[in-house]
Image 1 (cartoon, rainbow, N blue to C red):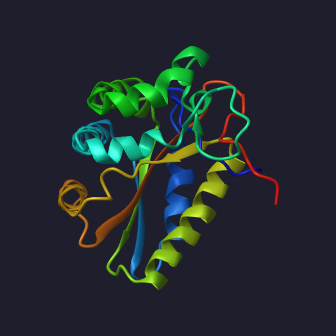
Image 2: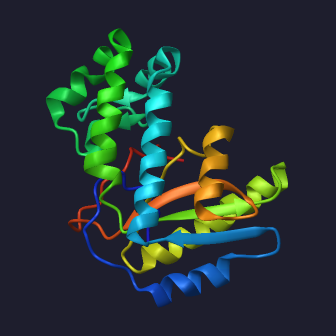
Length: 208
């Protein structure tokens, strides 16, 4: 199966707990734990924390202007950045989006709020990798294990997308650690679920 990130809403369809338990055992090792969050009450807590972290990030005008540099229209020919269609944004808003965000970065708070409600909330669950360390070797181990995990998900037709706002700030990391009751620090957070349709939509790929 091809590997890509799907940032759109997912179908409201449960995923086999037995399958997720098997993935957890296969992809947890010494110093590295994987946990899938599918309980509705716990999902709500993780979603609320993600929303808070997104609002905090969106309040940083300098950061949002940096993000604006990477937004692309749906008709772009560039092979980098983030076209609007990846997140289900229509063509016209995608054309003016980067300019509006650059001029009025505070509007990003409204955009983030809408994305959490209409996109991130539409997930079958969340996956979290916990690790004691934060060395280069630790991060490489997390990255490789994450890729193995999501390739296994993809083989079952399940899509995923990273959620970086929480794990990018230590204060939110500690809150997520408390919510999930882990002795280890959360280092990577992602959402997953079955796609609403079979369409494959991802960012442009440059030829190697």
